[in-house]
Image (cartoon, rainbow, N blue to C red; front, side):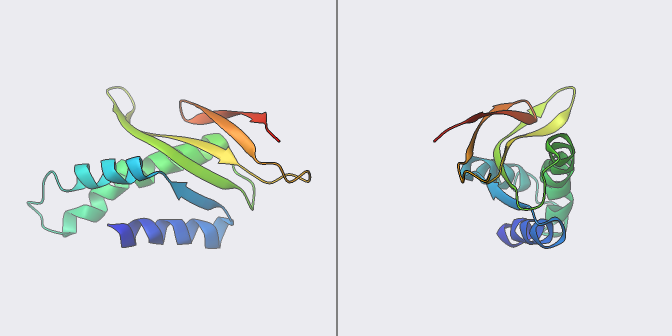
Length: 116
């Protein structure tokens, strides 16, 4: 599963020039959900990863609209009865003053405040 997540991160970085950071708690949740039912063996892992992570990631990226060179920090993954699997994340990018935006996540987007 780590290899599959790394492939997703590499593809996003190569094609869109957007770096993806995934909190350990999110990776733990994905692993826990993926191994719940291994009746299809390893073949089902890719399908589960798509439902748990890839589709929610697409929604999050669409809402954050990261520019080239930005970093998206995935901070939470949870199941919502209405929305299904949902990622909570934060857009971080360098600015000319070289300060990081500190992000306060709000659902699937973030509100940013300057820090020095």
